[in-house]
Every structure is written in structure tokens, then in C-alpha cells.
Image (tube, rainbow, N blue to C red; front, top):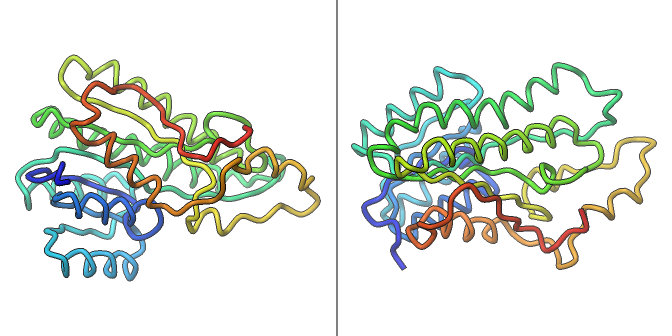
Length: 249
């Protein structure tokens, strides 16, 4: 299946987890890739793996919360390939803490990457996506759909991503641009592996965010991204799709 032959896809957070899995999936389906991440060594490994299989890649070490980095990523990728068809905003960070102890600096950093970074990428990419009648896939979370303990900044940022996605879908839908969000949960990623119940917290609250199925790998989400970003989903716009094994939250 080569749904992305002749297509150019920009993926943030491409050095690990869902971002890396999405890059590999879309490369297998024929996409040319623009990859961005702050983790230079890990990004280099992903690029080398993809290029060894014949994928054309433009990669940049980029902080999505930095407007200059964002502009350089989009303009550099479009200059390399001449077009942009899909934007996948996957870069994200998370920190667990009691809300009343949450440092403002950490709050601002998480919203800066997860929400403002998504906005900045969308703002830079939309003019190019309008030209190709392309689409945006934003990575939200089940944490943006219901209360998750100890994730105040992360949950707020992912709820904001959902609202931003719905806005873009309405604002640009008649111009041929789609925007959808995916809400993963219980996925084996570096973020999930870093989970630790804060000191003094009620561990019973963890059961609210455990899957009825099981934890699965990031390729589970990557396959959903591939569908939503493809022409198979041409009649899907302004939606949020849970990929979480049916958690209780």
C-alpha cells in the first residue's frame, strides 16, 4: 500500500516514540519526509535508518516552541521538496507532579512545546497545505479528554490541542484543508516509561488511566496517523480519535 507516493509529510517529535514510528510507517507507504526533533543523535539514527531503505528525508534539529526554528523547518523542507501535503504535530513533553506544587516554569515549558509549538507549526505550514489541499494531524491525548491525575500542564496543553484542531477544521475546511486529532493512551513511549506516582499520591487513581486492553507499541498510533492523513480519510475532518485500548477515563 503506497498511499503517500508523491506526498511530502512533516513530522515533529520524529526522533522517538510515536513520531519515529509514524516516520517509518509513512516512509513504507512512499512519503518523502521532513523530520524535526530536539534530540540530535536519536534523530540522526532515525534518518539513517530511513535513508538506508531509500526514503528521501530532510531533517532538522528544531525546537517547536521556537518560532525561528519552526519557520526554518517548514521553509527548508518546502525548499527541498517543493511542496507540503501533511503536517503531523507529534512533539510533546510531560511531567508528573501535584498541581499545587507545579512550578510555573515547568507549566510554561510544557504548554510551550505541546500547545504553542503545535500552533506555530500549523501557522507556518497552513499556506503550503492550502496549496496542496493537504491536512493536519495533531497529537492530543486521552489526558485532554478526561481528568488525569498529576498532569495539569500536560492535560491542559492537550485539551488546547483539541480546541485548536476543531478551530482549524472549521476555519479552513471549505478551502480543502482537513485537521484532525488523535488521542493516544496506554502506549509504550519514552513519556509513558517515565511515569512515576508523585510522593504521597493515592496510587488507586492510576487505575482510572489503565487500558481495558493492554499497553501497545507506538506503531499502533502510527497506523492511525497513516489512515487519517491519507485520502482514505478524505471525509473525516475536525475529529478526535481515541487509540487507548478503552481506558476508563
